[in-house]
Image 1: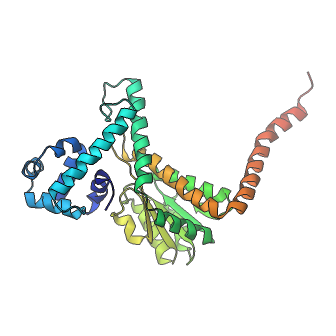
Image 2: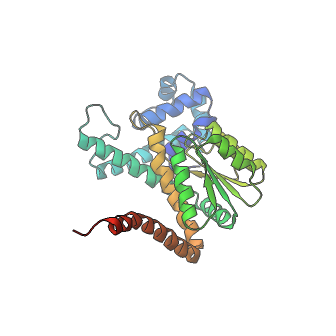
Length: 300
């Protein structure tokens, strides 16, 4: 069970029935309001039965609605403290907000995403994935849409410390690469929703080829987990002005950094030399046009 009840509610959505999903969305939309509702009142607000609400709470690991409501109250209190750090009374962006309020609210939301991702992260799984990557002859990283940016970020980080890693934004090329995977290799799929067909297909092909498969997702109970040996979970929230593409990015990049540093620690000597060589190569390329221009320009 997730240590944060609101995170657990969000992550449970893919596996909930339609009636239970209505309860979940009511809780996510107005957690502070739910604290003041009886089970009868919440059931009426969600157009469902008390039994459905009780089943929803038990499915999240709570003994019943009372236990669940206490957890929601504690979670909303913690978030209130965090909002106060940013001098906010309300975290959702309003059309009438000033530029200062927009900046403060986005900073709050992104800080919360990183903090909750770090707090809820399964560090045992993180280290298992890091060890698999260190031992792998080759790593593939798959991602579509905004998640492809995270996939490319991880690939370039791994490449810079000498790990053979590939990432293709073309879904057909990604599938071709996945089909050539072998036991011992690692394939990583990045998908906020866990429902991205292209990413899930590539992971399924890589898994069938014998690779160790890893998902980076906000919804560990979604379809992406079906083809994965390991799941690393982010904690990002969507809102009216902050779609999944925005909400996922900062949490995914933070998780990639956690993973990369654990890998780099195991490859410290190799990493240091690889980073030096890549830095020198880029530095010399930047200086080359200046040298070329200077050698052909007449002295003033």
